Amino acid sequence: MHFVTLVIGIWLLPKVNTLNCYECVPGTSETCTDTAKECPSPDNLCAAVTLVTYTGGSKDKEIKAKMCALARDCVEGSANFGSDKTVIVSKCCTSELCNSQYVSEPKSIPNGKKCYSCEGQQCTKTLNCEGDQDYCIKSRMNIGGEIQTLKGCASKMMCSENPSVLFQTYIGSGSSCCQDEHGCINTKLSL
Image (cartoon, rainbow, N blue to C red):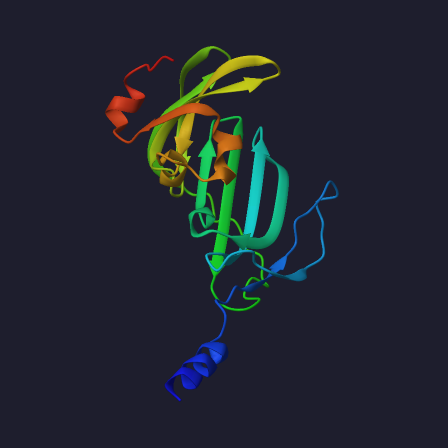
């Protein structure tokens, strides 16, 4: 009798639930249609992501997406290299189809911190940091087939030891950050 009760109890237990989330990943047209999708893992959350890039102070591209995501990809951050700036904002939630709304980028208000920025090979220009950009960053990127040094402002998420996959394309390889204004802005760091 106990065995039958145990078998029925196990059979009635719900399976490990995975969330159903909206998925909308834009293609080359940068538009898409929401579709409900079961996430592949119980570790997934529902996410709405907005990525905005600026070139020369003007908005260059804005991509909005919805998807299943891991907690480590539920991030918000920005990197500003002077002529180029990238802002990534994601909002994650844990209930069925909870990612119905897109998330907006935060306002860019100067925060008083200054970091170096590069113009060509000269990295002596100062840049006013904005919002949560409380670190100075230096990086190397392949731009037009040439490896260039970039310096600017970044938020903590961009400077973590293992930045989100979402950031890596926009901060380059071998990036490093510092938070001390005197160590960052008064010391000419070279790569």
